[in-house]
Length: 355
Ligand code: SF4
View (cartoon, rainbow, N blue to C red):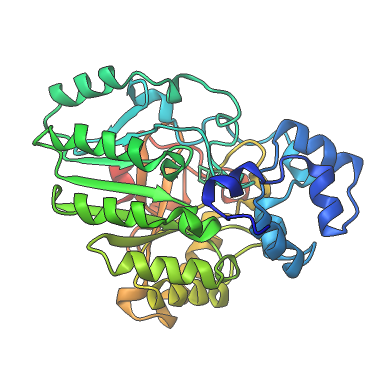
């Protein structure tokens, strides 16, 4: 009997046990890597496991999604972007004047090894406690907030009906004009973009001024035919599709891979939007590269791509100071007093300093 493949069944069948995964891959599993997976568990869907196998043990996908001994290094910050400083209600982070982050779930379709929340996602802390009434109450008192950004975890882990309930609630707050989702599903588990979700997106695109989905991918090898066709389906609705990528050492820290990635996004109707400098997260420092190196790569990317295909290169200043442009050819102070050995950004009293 043929099993029906749905996104929820794919989540249920995902590899969570490192031995089972390596058995499927046919690769040798070292005791050290097994220990890393105890601290930072894996979560790999069957379709991603197939892509990993094809790309090989030393490929970019293995680096993005499989444990490495380097994750045990004691460097890096537990909360690298200082989210908790700006937690205003359970599940609500208000850091920027007109927009707020809403974190309704801890669950993702994959555990990215570089994730800035890798030390928070395994424990359900106050960032994810469900108390929606407090969130609504804060929003009612803060009419300057015009955009809600669904993040997490990955917000598309929520069922369509839960997403609909949240959208209805936000649509009753007349100052909320824009809605944005940040998600890895369209690339990692594209079956999530089912007909019901497409209908939901079509319906709510008329309730808000803009409805956007920022699609997270870091390398063109992450895409397959299903993800490409689902993203094209999404692009045919009124939703605004944006790209979101992280510059990662050993994955995409070269102009050629980034050019391919931006061209892939563009060919699917996704506007290149954000290229994040990697966060200095505990357990993910092997993905970190000095800002100066990032700027060189970005400068070369600017020379290769037309203006409309160039994402903004941004960096989150540790300590909750927020995102600032990482590239400004006229600003030279950036490489000075706020950088540690090897070009690590330490902190800044005033984010405006960098702009
Ligand atoms: S999908 Fe996003 S939040 Fe989830 S592990 Fe990956 S980077 Fe982190």
